[in-house]
Image 1 (cartoon, rainbow, N blue to C red):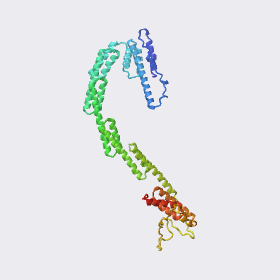
Image 2: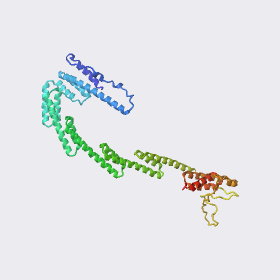
Image 3: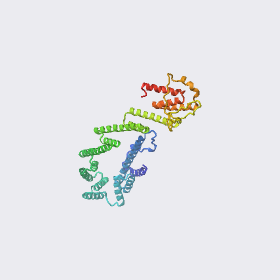
Image 4: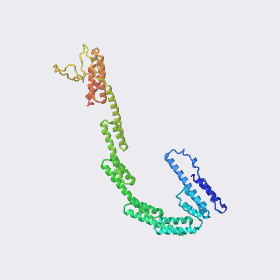
Length: 459
């Protein structure tokens, strides 16, 4: 837009000369088209895509204004050329080219105005005749594009020249025929992309060629079918190798190529269900191996692939609970005290602790070996939950070490009880009572386990 500032003084200077005998352009809408874009704020637009779209619109508007201004300046330059002011027409055309070098009309005008300003000995008729000779000579040698360019240069100097228009039209038809021929040749040899490129070049020249448009549509449909078949072949090949997710992606590509293909839709849905089931089963396997984090990750993937959400949620909940139990068990094991063997009292017989080495043989014979003590028979508990009446007789005979060891064994039994392992819990409660017959918690635990076994709940 900065370069446009250079145009305005030149254009105004050109318009100011001989103002009385020159048609002046009307002032109106174009004045309002020069927007002060620096004052536009994007603060009210929060969405990134909306901002991009807005800025794109602004850029298009700026381009439209530039094109409009360039056309206006070109008309002024051409007016200068027609009036014989070749030097200034040449300068003004060069200003246009400094902004848009691709403007062919400005290129021709700059060249011809520069030639006329430099030599000034050739008339316009002589220049036009020379271009006719050059164009016809190029045409005879098969250089159609260059020949067409020469005739279009004549139309820049003389827009109403019917002879030049006929030549341009004639060459356009021949170029279109050549592109059409090349397109069919490429199509015959299986190069569909090249065929389409050639035919689209024809449509630029002949926009209303219905037959060619139909052929292009036919070839594009055929290319889609071939591309889709290749994609499906790749998808089935991946599936046969057990690569389910890459196969699924290929099926999705196939649906992008041909969205309405029902068979492909069916395959895609079935494969999605298979992937979801595979993740779910992988989660179950990891759970059985106590790999709870892996199990949860697989179940979440199964959910993402459409597996039943209720089943997934239930399993994840179970895994989280199992993780908590495992962590607690590990903590309890680390904090579990070593079994304490109470010291013998003068008037108290030594009571062996289950799982420890006995100090005396269990048989009457001295075999020379020290056998491992076996758990004693379960203590019979009466009808009361807390059999204190039977235990008070020995109350003064229990040492503090025995009481502590009994409590420790009771806590281990309570852990097994909470986990549902009744056999280990019963053994720990019995050991606790052996160490301290007054341990009412251990007695109550034994009673509860016996009640469950009698009712069949612990089987």
